[in-house]
Amino acid sequence: MKTLRMEFKTGEDKNFVVSLSNVKDTLTAADVTTAMNALIAQDIFVTPLTGIESADVVTRTEDPLIGA
Image (cartoon, rainbow, N blue to C red; front, side):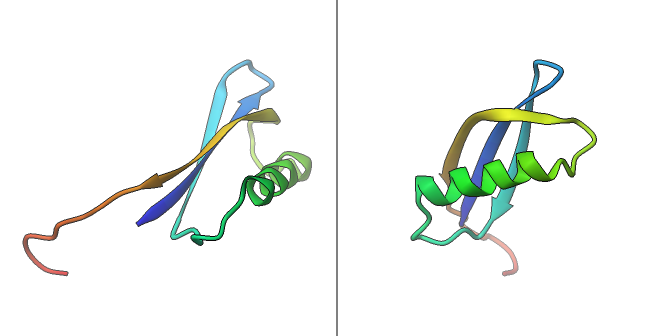
């Protein structure tokens, strides 16, 4: 499974992380930058986002032992 991990700077000089699961294989840095800037502009979180810190695609492999 691939997860997009976006880290923002806040007005309180701290970091704020948003993670989204099941991202497309075709995701580009430009796509992520556009999305992050949109989240900053929309001001939808209690903590104000002031800038982009970083973004990563995290790949995780699971080996189920019981169940699916």
